[in-house]
Length: 454
Image (cartoon, rainbow, N blue to C red; front, side, top):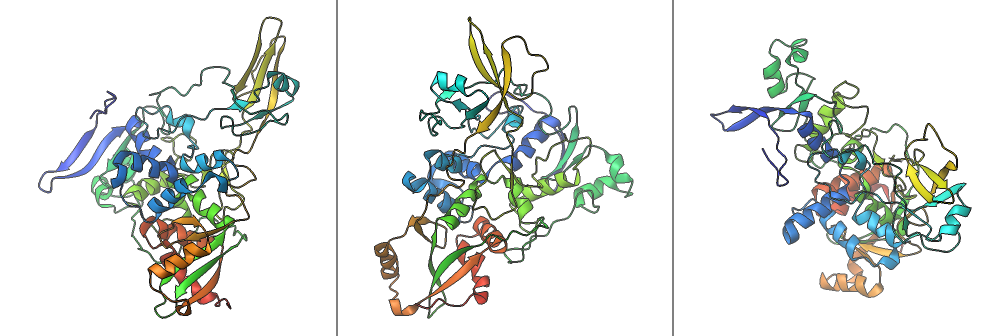
């Protein structure tokens, strides 16, 4: 098996010739790493790659296509910074360093670059706490100058393309079934609990490869987090009184910020948030089988399937309703050397064990590229359709929607719904499977909320 870039893989495949079906394949760690990397892709990256690959014929993933298109069409003036919009449209991968080790990396997001003040004298005067930005020219230094001078790492990073072990241990071998279940290539492991380990592996009769049952679009959400979040937002829903049909919703910037920030969550994190009761093709099998291998010696000491969903540094919004974490930048430092012959400033991952004369290491302060702790600027009002098309609210546009649907004002009623973690999970689940994300995600909660007096 070869890729367009000339990289070749080999695998042993067991086939059922009568049914022309693959039963399982034996693969090395290189190919297993590529499959695992799918779980690290943020939803925004998935939408961007699909749009790029299929142009106007991209596969429909619930309401995410229209939500992503609306994000791209929304004027930059509605964001605190231009970088904030870029972070949502082209989110960084929290495991970008590991992806550089892959022989084939489908995530073509450019590696994160770091920038300091363009005023060289300002940088040297503030070496005690160097300000660093992750987007060219989108932040301002305390001196007022743009942050557009790139600062590189002290030495070549160890993440070499094709290096063994992005997520799996070097020389590891795995068995992968046709529906993407993955286990170490050790038949003896299964024989400890079964007299027919190979049959059990294929037909899923042991806990080694857990069974999965699709529960459809039910609203019961499984949660991995035992710590509830108490942050709540409000959403006004407008229905047709005579039919109960959803027409549109109106809300302020906090709900829109939350909706757009869904694109920053890695696919593995989405599966974890939904508690395993919602399936996306066969990718959930890969996620579950990796979860069962957590801590084993065949995987590196990482969390590639995001049991605890993690975002890249500075990506977590103040309006996030899910129990998410973000990577910290505490492992980065600034190295400087100033002599009469040269002035050098670099980033370094670790504190150098030895420092020569005139060499120093300093703390780094990362600026928030998205702005005021969130992406969407306020105060602002927005209209949201059932398939999550987001547009700025105007009286004319709202009336035109009702007029186009031929619905008189006397035939509408309004509800105000509080949006917390439970409602947010329901929206996420519906947005992945339906073009009626609001109707399916929130209608079951309408019984809990009274009508709004007009």
